[in-house]
Image (cartoon, rainbow, N blue to C red; front, side, top):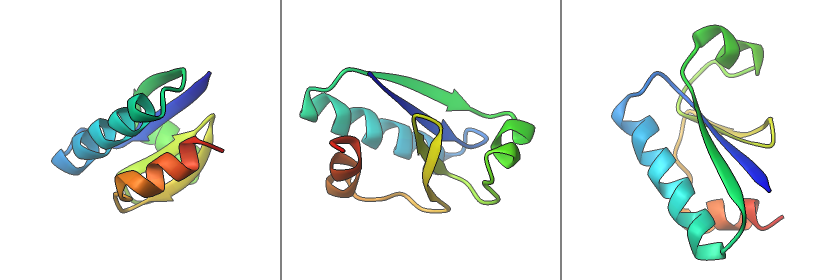
Length: 78
């Protein structure tokens, strides 16, 4: 099971990234768990200085942008 983590303070971009990542995971048919991380200390501890950010299984894949659903699907299928 993949753990998809969205890092951000709850802005619209963070919500959009959450929705896109969840949709991509559903379309792939993978088992996943979604987690929102909005604690600034946890976010910076993960090395993220700009949000929104996406981490898969604790590894940051993107920050400061929202990748396309196709890119998300590619990352999630690895």
